[in-house]
Length: 417
Image 1 (cartoon, helix red, strand yellow):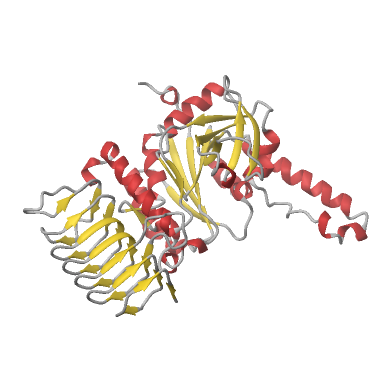
Image 2 (image 1 turned 120 degrees about the horizontal axis):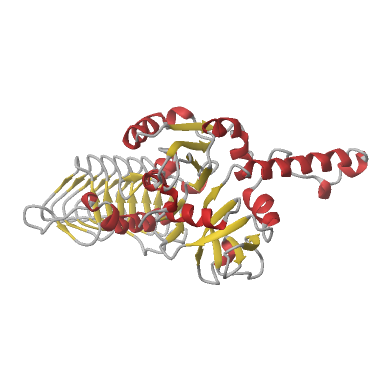
């Protein structure tokens, strides 16, 4: 199929935005910025960036966040060389809001004179159907197109709910995390805009300045809490842009039937790692391990094993397992639904399930590190921080263990600080 986006020479930009600090991702974010945490053996941010390989005429990729630039230097260099596309990390000096952050770097972004700008949230897990979105966006002829997905009515209120015209796909109504049910279609956090988005953001800032000037007329009014407004340059994409422009023939939706999840907690990272591993069957089958239990470990389902990891042939691995660099998996070990990070040692006959085993941790012989697998629950998965030692025959269930701890007795439903 020939995409409409291949019919011209327009310049496309990709902007990936990072959440503020990733505090809900602790204890894992103590060691690594959340966007670099590995899912299916690749940094979280790598999955949306990899999807842009399918976008023709991609001129530049920008990463926006609050982390120090040095933390992303190695990754930026690596991915830029891999894609043969310039990649640059831009550090925000202070919070500007999801739309204000984009506007803050507008001059730099517009240097490439882009025809379209993809805007993606890093903590989203999906198939990123970017070429199809671009084709739909051009057919609609609006300022922006939003990726949406259908979810259960019970969970919809946790996200931005929207209503669209069933024939034209025009966005008619948008509300962020409503108290009452509006729709089972939600905002996926993946967008494509024309440069006119900057005019819309500027309009919000101008209106806010005008209101601030009016309030200065009455010093008493300005002191009242209910009249305080957000900073002039703090602009939220959902409440300040999407909601006001709904129904004005400027915004449209593109609905996906593929998987979609939001990666807010470590527990969800296990689920999302599994979703990406399953996607590898179609996009990157060479990344998936195989083995029959004779010369290589027995593999069930979708499994990623880093080339430097050492896995005993009698181990049983899978489904949904990701094993990182220099990990050592002993004889008879059983791993399922888990993420094993760099330099981990799992000794003979140990069991790991629905868990994340942190860097340089060690799990003893016949030990069990497991959880119920409720990815939305606070203690639905077990997480071992960096350099945690679980001694032989110790059971750890539904628990979070902070770094540099040694466990010689069993732990259940606990957070060990």
